[in-house]
Image (cartoon, rainbow, N blue to C red; front, top):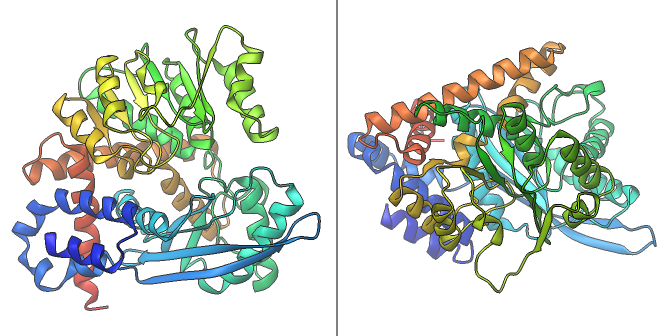
Length: 449
């Protein structure tokens, strides 16, 4: 495994996020390789860490003043061993090949855990929708899809939304795909309800995180009710996480964006959450405006010179990092331990650094890794694909019941896999092992492809 990692680093030395994801994965699956020497003999790992296909393309578009801009677009199709490539499109200035590869790699095993027939992929562009008019976002999305449409399809690769890619962007992308292909098909998920979308899809990732956390707590005779929660982020995942925590009787103290975070000792209730949704989704404002509406709350601006995030210093019982990758480091983890946090469930993809994860283990903090805990989004994307294929529309209750059942199954799969391979109670190892063994079995069955 050290040879494999060294080879990856030598080939792509600048891809630090991808190296981090692979290193964590390889460390978890050592017990599996010891029992299955055929995986090594057939170079299964070497094949898994190399994408089946990487697509890079330019995206020229024109702003409202007639000025032309050029962004870079990506689609990494990582593995189709158990189904068509599936994964979101991220529109954010930080996007690069390393981030897209790491997200695609994680997606392979996350999708495997859902029990659905979905491969793994990811895409996006170094474009920031913030600060642009609807017309500019539309022109960018149309230019992006003018290239991507050649590489996707309902049985080939089915993108979805991600950071910076919400209902507005999915609508523009789908409209352009439909025009170019002259067919109406479920090639994107996260669609509007009037044209093939599924109920619960916008909320699915956040709901799934809380359902997974509930299963973790229940195993120890506890429940979300009455617990005090720290949540980072103020986007779709954070909003739906807060919504479900409130529904289950918990109290949420924080939310954040890139400028800083709010702390509301009284708790962010449903009315306050509705204000945050309007602020972020409609007006596209900053989280500090919350304190203008609710002056009892405190706003703490972000300060990158600290080396840690003040959001994680508040006392609480549970925490959900739901903003971005590597947002929570070792110092943050120690602050959470000091603040009495008993459980951390990842809402974003790989939000905790390796140092932070190790601290959680040392202090027996219940740790729900992203590839298991935030799999609810792609699970309901799979359910949306099923509804599109059948030309059916399931009720909210049916979709949410299926989502909760999937999250319960993922939780049990993680525990079972960890126990079988000598890592009882280790959700991170269990998630990697359970996801990997299913993909590995499919790869063996399909030969050297």
